Length: 613
Image 1 (cartoon, rainbow, N blue to C red):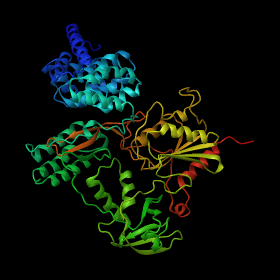
Image 2 (image 1 turned 45 degrees about the vertical axis):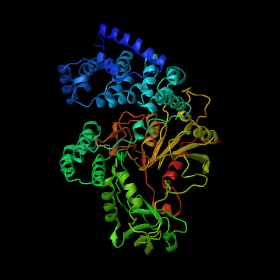
Image 3 (image 1 turned 90 degrees about the horizontal axis):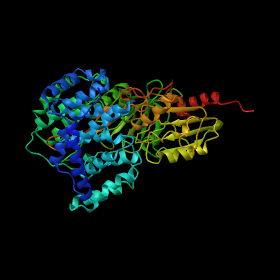
Image 4 (image 1 turned 135 degrees about the vertical axis):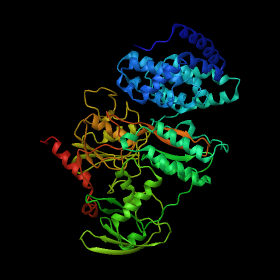
C-alpha cells in the first residue's frame, strides 16, 4: 500500500504552505519554529502504538525485508514516537530515492520533505543531506523549502551542492531573491552569501563540510564530563553503521571506557579519553575536532634520520626514500636497503609497537592502512638529535650498521615508490607517455578540475597502445559521478561526446594508501570491468559522514553514519578494492629505481595491444 496523506491534512498543509510559504517568499521572512512544527505534525501522526511498532520493526531489522509500500507507512506513522534515533531512520529512508518505482521515490521524497520541518536540527539536516539534496529534479515546492532552510542557516553548503548538481540554480535563486530585501539584516546577509556560493564550484560529498564544522560552539559548564562522555558513547553506538562489519563489541568498549569517564578531572584528560573512544571505531573518517576549546595535546615522535620505508614483497621495511643531503644520506643509507634492527631490537617488534601506539589514538579502517603508516614512521624519535642505530641489508645481501641522528621533522613524503621523470608526486593529476607507447596518468588526488585534467591527459595519450591509471597514494577528495569517468567510457556510450575518449586496454594501479574518494573513483573501473587492477588492496575507508557536538560543547566528533559503496554493490569500508594481480614492490627493484607494479602492468598491456603491421 503506497503512502497516502489524509485529505484533510493535505488541504490544511496546502493552505499553510500557500499562505505561509508564499508570504515568506514575498516578504523575505523566514518561517518561525511554531509554523515549522505545525507542518511537521500535520504529516507525522502522534501515535504511541505506531511508535512502538516502528521500534519493534527497527530493532529486529524487519523493515529491511519488507517492500517499500509497507515500510514507508510504518516509518511515517511511528516517526514522532519512536525511541530510536530519528536521524538514523531518516538516513535509511534516503535509499528509496533511488528505487525503480517512481511512486516509491515520490513517497520517500514526501516523507523527507516533511521531516525537514522537524523541531530537531539533526533530523532536518539528515533529511536534506541523505535525501532531498540528491532528488534528481526538484519541484518548485522543494526548491522553496531549500531556500527557507538555507536562509535559516540549515545545511547551506549541502543545499548548494544539491541544486547545482541538478542544474537548477537559476530556478532556485528565484526563491532566494525575496530574502535579499528582507527586513531582517541577518537574513539579507545570508541571502547574499548564498548567491555567492553559486558562483563557486561545489565539490562532491567527500569534500563537502557541514556548516556545523565552521561554527565555534559555546562551552556548557552545567554539563559534567561523565554526562557528556556517556552521551557521546551512546550516540556513536546508535548511529555508527559498521560495528557488525568490523566485529566491534561496542558494549564491551563501554564497559572499559565509561568507568574511566568518572575519573576525568581536566579538559585535557577528557579530550584524550574522547580521542581514544573514537579510535575504537577503527575508522579513518572518525576523529575528534575542536569545539569550544582546542584539541588535547598528545605527544608523539616527530623526528627521524632522513629516510622512509615501505613494506616490500617479503613483508620487510625497505628504504624507498632518502632525503637529499639529510643525515641518512650522509652516512650511506641508500634506497633499496632493508632495515633489520633498530637500536638492537628486531624491526618486526619495533613496527608492532608503533602500530599499537598509532591505533590507540587514531582510528584505522584496516590493518593494511595502519601498517602503511607504521612502516613509514617506525624510526621516528621524541627528541630532536637522538642517535639511532640501524642494522640494514644492502642490495648485495651485506649487513651494514649505521648510527645516525634523528634531525628531520614532519615533511611531505612521496606517495609513489619510485620517482618518474615528468610526473609530479604532489600534483593532483600528472601524465606522460612511457616507453613502448604506454600512456600513464597519475591521479594523486580527486579534486576540482579532475575532468579538465583528464581531458588533457587522454587527449595527449589517445594513441597509446595501452593506458595505465595510477591511484597509489591517492588521498581522496570529491568527484561528480556523472562526469568523472567520461574519458574511459566505451564507444557505445554517447555521454559528452565532445570529450576525449580512450577505448584501448587499461590497467589501474592501487595500493594500501589509496583511500576514501580515491577508492570510490577507482571502483568505477571494477564495476564497469574497464581495467585490470595491479598492486595491493586499498585502505578500505569510504563513508558518508556527519558531525556530532558533545553536550558540553568542548569538542565535536566527525564520524561516518553510512558506508559508501562507490560504483559497487557492497561497502568499500574495511574490505577496500582488491587487485586482479596482487603484486608488491621488491627491495631489489627499489635499488634499481624500478617500479615493480608499474612494470607488471606495462607487460600486461603490451600483450593486450594489437600487433602493429
